[in-house]
Image 1 (cartoon, rainbow, N blue to C red):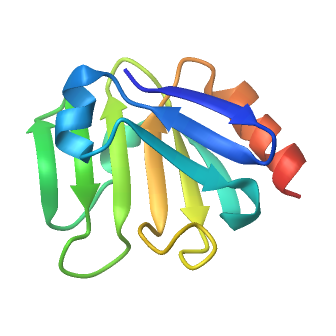
Image 2: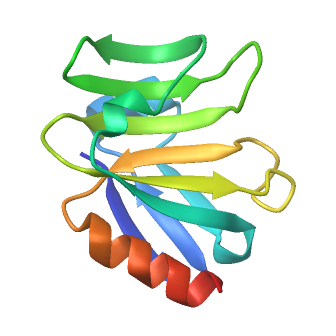
Amino acid sequence: MATVTIKDSSIIMEFGPWERFFVGRARHTIPLAAVRQAIAADQPLRVPRGARRGLTVSGHTKIGVWGLYGGPRQLVSVNRHLPGVHLLLDRASSGGEFDEVVISAPDTDRLVEAIRAVAS
């Protein structure tokens, strides 16, 4: 499971060994200034859409990059046992790679409130 921390003016996501293989990185950092909206997702498996590069275990796990051929490009690491955080990003400000991030976290409400407080 990925860990999400807020440090200085960034959101830092560190991926576990299996996640790294599917998302293509060990860590992803997003400037808080690039966050347009932070939403708590009770069912994060429903958020990713479009063509993907990654892993889908139907009804259980999604890890990888969604939206390869159109629509919003999403970095995804979610599973059914945890709620998720859905971040809508300003793609240019976030490094130009992703429009959205969807990630499971055990402390979703606290994380969303912290992002909203700092990004506002």
